[in-house]
Amino acid sequence: MEQRRLGRTDIKVSALCLGTMTWGEQNSEAEGHSQMDYAFDAGINFFDAAELYPIPAKRETQGRTERIIGSWFQKRGHRDKVVMATKVVGRTVMDWFRENGETGELKRSQIEFAVDRSLRNLQTDYIDLYQIHWPDRNVSGFGSNPTRWLDAEQVEDENSIQSVLEVMGDLVKAGKIRHVGVSNESAWGTMRHVTTSELYDVPRIVSIQNAYSMVNRTFETGLAEVARRENVGLLAYSALAQGYLTGKYRHGALPKGARKTLFNKMQRYEHHRTFEAVEAYFSLAEAAGLDPAQMAIAFAKSRSFMTSVIIGATRMEQLETDIAAADLTLSPEVLEKIDAIHQEFGNTAP
Image (cartoon, rainbow, N blue to C red):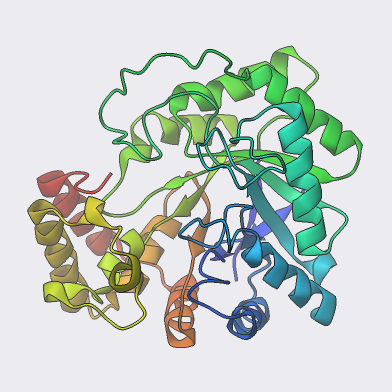
């Protein structure tokens, strides 16, 4: 498994990262442990979680994913061999993340509460990469269309980037976290994090976790240059467009146990232009003799701004297929045809 440098740190992470958000909802603890065993044995040393998980976010399941990972660390003893990433929620109306019914925001007391709980859940003394799941401010992107400006008022009690990074710096000094990352961020927000660290004694972010796939290449407009020039590499989620690029939902199929079948919350992919684009990618994969899921992952992995592609699965055979993409290098001809399809259809599911 190829290893890549995490930001400007001395940490090397696998080019594929094991996503975990189904554990505790669609997957049991035993299934989560089996996935970690398989991924670890295949050379994946990078796991990604969040205090929010499992998905969909619910009061009664919150934290289960981290606890499943923690019990695996306790049983297997591999903590020093895994780069563990998790996230703190941003501002939210969900009132079950904090003790007294507070809705989430990125202020000191809430961040400290969140990190201490994640450490307990993960049964570890430190978190390698602590990520801000989404910004404290109103921003186009997570939950809205990143190709259109969100003309929203500034949050009155918005916690500044500097104040958040000051808290993170104290957590680094306390040994609770090693490095900081952002997620669902904009180019402006990412650069503000970088420049704030240059101006003040606060941690420099090492990564950005945003959506990226063949039907959503919005990262390439603005953020890709930031990632390359500032060494804030992308940790891509939804490289398979939440399953649409695997073919499992093709022609209206609803597989038993699949996310769309269970939760029906994938409308961003249910546009006729998205279906047309996906079919074009399927045709390309078939003509090239490639598995469509592996082609999608290999494409994401090939990007110069990519640190690691996050993969997730509910069934072991899906995970095996995804991990096999680590050894796949797409030919220049296939990459050119992917670009041609994107030129025709654009970002149909941002």
